[in-house]
Every structure is written in C-alpha cells, then in structure tokens.
Image 1 (cartoon, rainbow, N blue to C red):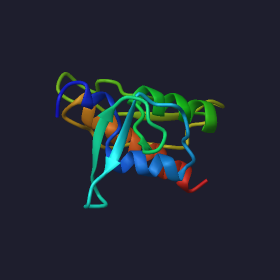
Image 2 (tube, rainbow, N blue to C red):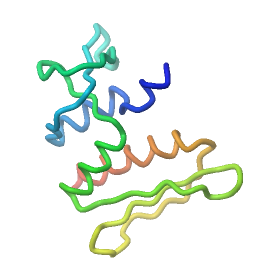
Image 3 (tube, one colour):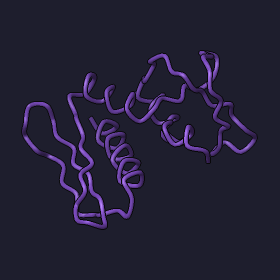
Image 4 (cartoon, rainbow, N blue to C red):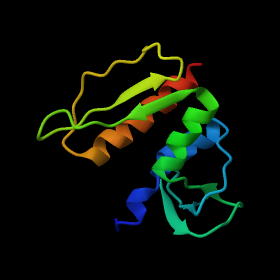
Length: 120
C-alpha cells in the first residue's frame, strides 16, 4: 500500500458507507474484483463505481449527517485511542482499547461510527 492509498477508507468500510447512503463525490473509487471482499483502489472521478472517500471525508460526513464527531488522541507515549462524541455533548460511546498506531485507531474509530449509525 502506498502513502496515497492510506488516505482512503478500505474497501470493506467503503461498502458499509454506501449501505448507509454515503453519496459524496470522491477523488477515488473501487473497482470490484472477483473476490467480493476486495476492491482495487483507483484515483480519479468515476461515479459508476464504488466511491472511496478519504478518512477526513468520511469523518466529516458522520459529523454533518449524524452529529457524531471523533478524536484520535495519543493515549500514552506509545499508543493511541479514539473517542466518539455526539455534537449535543452527551457521551454515549466509551472505548477501552488502545492501538499501536494512529492509523489503526483511526480505522477502528471509523468502524465504530459505522456500527453506531447502523443501529440508529
């Protein structure tokens, strides 16, 4: 995976976002492969394929559509965590896990946002 690909949400989460009706224009898209669990990331505009949002696009969408915002703070000198807060300030979501990298915490945060909104 090159550095540019790290900016885009993985295929599995792009599918879940589509199921939640994410329909923002994106600078990337996935071409589905024979294995339904995988997609090949392409850079460029093409609305005929599965949109591949960046992490910042996905997080902004959750803030605007569902009133949920996230932070990924460094927990200690060596690990990371995340927190999801409703805009109304009432904290409903707690996390006890820590992650070795920022990127790992960011991905798990996105997965949790998807899980939360699927149950709404």
